[in-house]
Length: 242
Ligand code: DC
Image (cartoon, rainbow, N blue to C red):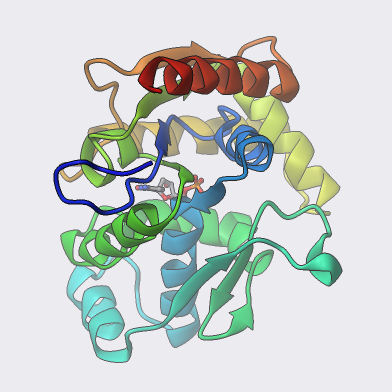
């Protein structure tokens, strides 16, 4: 599709936000596959910077130390569609300075750390332009917490995906057990509520429902049903535009 004003290729952007385990990742990946779009997991980008900081031994609650380290070292974060040999259940391949950290960024330790460093403006200022740049060059399904509000507020489709907290905790607990992590459902539920609280109440780029967003409650729905709904709406929108 061509933007008639500036004559450059205009990409189709689907922006998805929502709390932990609302089904954003698996749904976004499936929608991207069906439409031939790129799936962009911005949480994985923040997770990579968290892992980098933890490995360097900085105290994550020390904002100046974290931002200083990341600004000095400028670790390189890359996302790509998993290659044939990387298809082990991951949604995307995450590279940190070239190292495959796709699973290393999914531990509970990184999950706890990431919600601390995503509160820092200096950290967000590293990821936001990177995410925007990706969406300017290809059709994307991008998910996170501030995609509809900050990163791509003018996206073709703005979605806020949600589900009831206990259902989200059960989904997340199942995922962690499959990965061999030893946690109880109660722990996962408490962690999830705490992280939601932090993501929605932080001063900078909090998770919120923006005006005009499609509120999609996935409670009791399968991933396929959610993906079908989104693809159907995208196709409707595209046919209206043509
Ligand atoms: O979606 P996730 O669980 O991988 O996200 C990891 C953390 O990063 C989570 O605490 C929310 C935060 N995040 C954010 O603040 N902004 C984004 N665009 C994506 C994730």
